[in-house]
Image 1 (cartoon, rainbow, N blue to C red):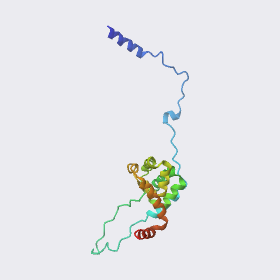
Image 2 (cartoon, rainbow, N blue to C red):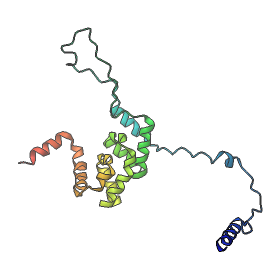
Image 3 (tube, one colour):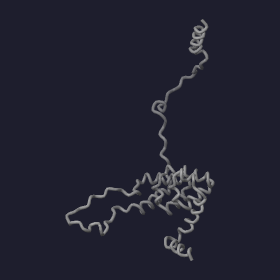
Amino acid sequence: MKSSTALILSTAIGSITGFVPVQTTPRTPTSLAFFGTTKKAAPKSSPLADEAVELYTSKYSGGARPKLFFESWGMPESYSAPVDTSASIFDRKNAELTSTFNTIASLYGEDEALKMVKIQPGILAFSKEDFKPSLEAFGEKFGYEESKEMIIRNPGLLSVKPANAAVADDLTMQLSYVVDFTRPIGAAGALFLGVLLPT
């Protein structure tokens, strides 16, 4: 008897709507309620993005690969090599390059992002999804602002995966200074320094 009374009482209490607030003013439906919210505006592109994309394409869009002198050795005149359809690892669409530049600019600032692209245009081909997590991982090791300066000195560090950035040691920071210092002297200067070290 007790269990049936408890069941009837809980059912009655659950179905009571006396304590539910009643809406006093009618809601007027809008077209937004029917069709959904307005579309988000396209992300604003940096004004320096066009210059960065131009730097990238001028360096990496070489067109068709020139035929090397030895590729036809030992082949009869009637032979024609199959068409090479493999694309370069640096082939990217302008929209993708612009998006990558905008990601870099949002993290480091527009002027610094353009400076990094001028140093190493290939950074626009790197995976932009890794930029922020890697910066945060470097930031835990070296400090956020110091990590930003380190990556600006050595833009190649943008290619580092977050897991590898988390285990970076002090040598990464030290080598960013070396890379920044030796960049203006070029490859011949680095060779010259290499010759001077043993002496």
